[in-house]
Length: 453
Ligand SMILES: [Zn+2]
Image 1 (cartoon, rainbow, N blue to C red):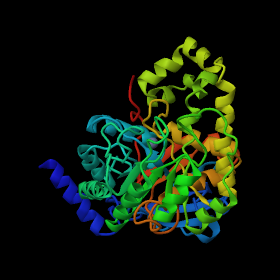
Image 2: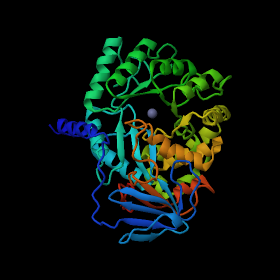
Image 3: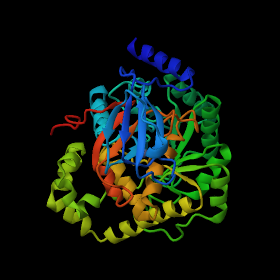
Image 4: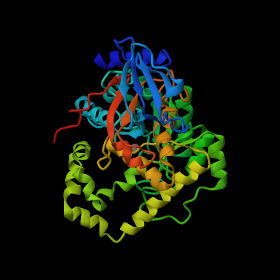
């Protein structure tokens, strides 16, 4: 009964178009953040001395201090020396376990300024219902989207528990089932894992994409090659996870001979307004903490980490086995190819969003978003470009696609934002220097949000 009620609620809100109600704010004067550096998420030049006015859960105005009035009656907060950025948008999340555990994952996200997460393909009907509650704008929760349960080849990657249709009709029926549960996205894994040939067949992929679009859901594909990417684009899909460079599966972990996307593919992706969420963390976090155990001295990161994975990285023998393995240099060289892909498609003008596979054991909720931004800068993007990827570009992919009312700090947008104590344009790692987080126009009480070990 409860599940049906929640699904109905989610659908009713979806019908209003926006899908989210701003939180009630008692004060009528609102809040004015005065004197900080404003990075609004659009990619516009930063405003060194800004005013950001928040009222009734939304940005009322944001701009340079000399042209942006502070309303009478507003609570003025001096943020001189600080930087304001939009709340972060993670397009590649796998929430884990039940309501209690996900509530903790939400809290960890909010602690780290991640105000939106897209759960992409591993959600049971019960979890979909829970995530739709968060989607509706529940105070104290980040905004959530869900792809329900994803699609795989019957013997393919992660097939256990997935939808694994053998015919086009079956694929279409299973897509409709997911949409009926409330899934806003339809996710498929298109990769030759665990062995060649075990990839969802092209005609099944086309049926999934077509049925998703017909039913108002956005199709999303995990890929690792250009051939399947082209076929999916021709079928109407435009939202990709990972890259066209082989990341997993046979040969994954060693550099490939021809990692660069072809000019024809770049043109096609640009023409069709494709977006990539390359998801570097899932690869690099497979060794990063072995190479940099000093990161694990940070109590907040320790709290955010999956306890089992943390215990592994705490073990000196495990770390030594990773960095001393003969294939370690090859893994790093292969990873550099993924970073080069990010730089290449970004330079080509193709949309690059940000997500990290948070919820997989080695990718901590919250902290991992900041680490993914750092890897974009290592790849050759500027800190500003990494921030845009992690905010506005991600928000633009969430339904109704291109109409997000969050993700940037502009008049009229939902007030999800992060106040930083240090300048992220000087060093992208400064996005971790969080002073305060605001969600739906209300300050998040960060103390106590992280799990206690
Ligand atoms: Zn994933």
